[in-house]
Length: 442
View 1: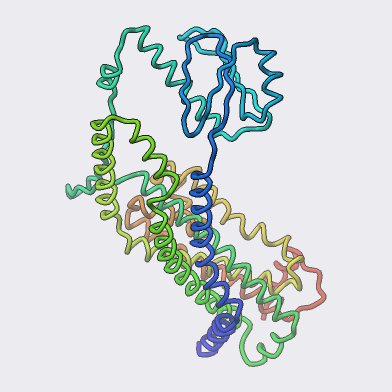
View 2: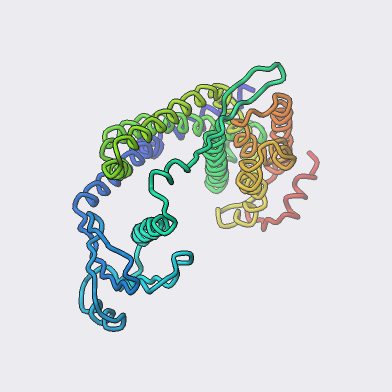
């Protein structure tokens, strides 16, 4: 065990003391807030300097009266459509809007002509203006005033309460849990894959540089493999922890600095200016109520338990797949040779990743979600995606035990391949060869 510890220490210090580690660990958390800050600043400046788009209008229905805004300037044309097209082509205006005579019950035939493909946001803005006008025309036809219509609007917001067997009530929010499961599942998938490939690369480098021949003269190949896996895991966990802390703090600071100037905030302010005072008060009241409810739901989430589970499955999944990556690294002599083995190894992890979206986030307590979260090869992604949905403790315990068992099994299998492959050079490796090395006695 002392030799494994020395190898772990060597792998850890070797990577932590490199300039590349320090640069990556510090720069990555700085890059994300910097990108957010620059993009928000550019969006803000672009919104401030943006000129209104000119839209020529041929309204054969005679039902529309367009008002200019900061976003659009409307130019009505009194000419046939074909003539209007020619006139439009001679200008640099954004679009030509054609409105034919139409039935209010079925408004069809409206066309927007542009010289280039417009963004969905610009087209959506014009559609919204047309929809609002047609809605007003329908209200007039049915002799319904806007106040009556407003009174008919109903908003239903189901308050979610989890009721335990003991009768204890706990508030919940599926949207928050979905986002939490989504984010944690993707993080596990990315980090297990990235650091697993790092193990393989490290083993290949040592094998091709012949350093390993010196090392195995004093330690067993299995001890070397185990120390390398755990050492790189420690580096990954340290780097991940630093990234989370720095990215969270710096991103919060950047968003706080630009918070009052965010484009979404400006859009909300423009909307509130067009609303009546009572509407604004009601909207603000509803918004504050939702914020309070969200904060209450967040306070009910067991973040301590989730953090523990995340770290456990990060390490467990990494150790399980790391052993397999180490075995492949010992068998090949270049990253190109390893390509044929990488996909079969990572396929179960990919299944867990796809299952996160197809099953777990849609039905976290369904049978497929259960099996994905207890099978060791898929559980690192699946269980982390489920944990926010209050997984029964017995399922969590079963999954953890099986993951530990899976890690021990893959380490044993990988160790038998590693002890032979790490000293083999010039051999054309295939799955048949790997099986032969695994079955070899000694």
